[in-house]
Image 1 (cartoon, rainbow over the protein chains, first blue to last red):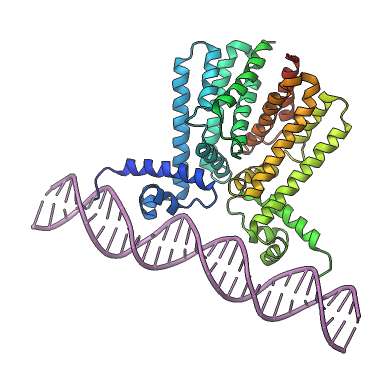
Image 2: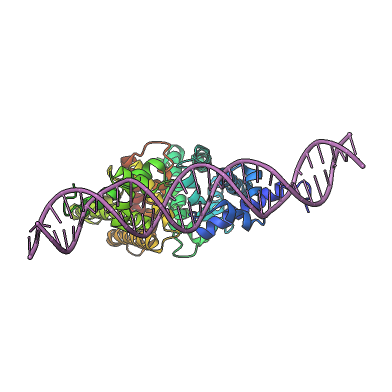
Length: 194
Length: 194
DNA sequence: AATTTTATTGATTGACTAGTCAATCAAGCT
DNA sequence: AGCTTGATTGACTAGTCAATCAATAAAATT
């Protein structure tokens, strides 16, 4: 059975299983054994590849951030003009592939992890800084000096909609959430430069 | 030592200790024993009064929501006119007594708990509904039919600022956060009724 | 063929934790 | 003085979980 070079496959399976397990169990009682079973291997193997539970979570976190970042970058590449760029960021943030129950639960879990893990904290700060930076750069040519605070508001708005949907009352509707954020954006833009 | 009628005092001490412990340890490894020690009693007594860990957390949650609700109601009572009412809600949401590291961490913990505890979920949904309802009622006479979606955006904005500060990069500045939300509000109001 | 390397797991360990319980202590009531 | 009742805890139980390890099996290397 033991084929060679399965390490990347196993790591990927564990990362995916972690997100799935968090989405299902909601962060409490997500154990290494459950993750490993979901990925089709023993818990000992999970430890072998990642060294520990925190490392597994961090890997899942990095994966989520990477996928999200790639989606944003891809959307940005196709955007024409500053307003389209902001719209691309917002739409990517609420794309169907990310604005899903499991992923939302995973994000929430990351925020909790970030309270005790310095690495997790750093990763989330990085995400926040990048999001605001992307928004700010898109806003700058449109509203000049107001770009900073407006970017902060839009970023908070995005995070707020994620938090809201973590309760899982209404099933996530990414398109509607994106429209809400874009309506705030258009109000800010209508207000002009000042 | 055993004086009579200490039950309410003990319960209050445990609730306060829970919030303190969460703020310090960041939700992971917050054990009943730690909470009880922080409240100056044995873990057995904590179980005696609350019946279990989840009940202790739920009590802390109810307490936080109650205090927050009282603060909002107090601010609303003094507000003159619809715009002042909304401003009161926002300011109360970011008052120094609540926009603190421990309380923010506690809120985050509640959201996590709400993923597995139906009671916690119901409580948070209740909070969200009340917040939006309060905002909507204040907005109605100002912008009519737009009150609904605008209330949603303001509520998400408030939650978003809380989430952002849960990372604890910059120490919480409630006044600044309130100003940010109020700026969004004034933009929405400037846009008129339509 | 022998050796090394990688893959894999069952079994185990050690630490910790929620919850229980019997026993103790003190205050009020009769 | 004796009974009841609330307060309180130390000790214990039963369970869980992360992490370790020794052992096995198969590929790759020599």
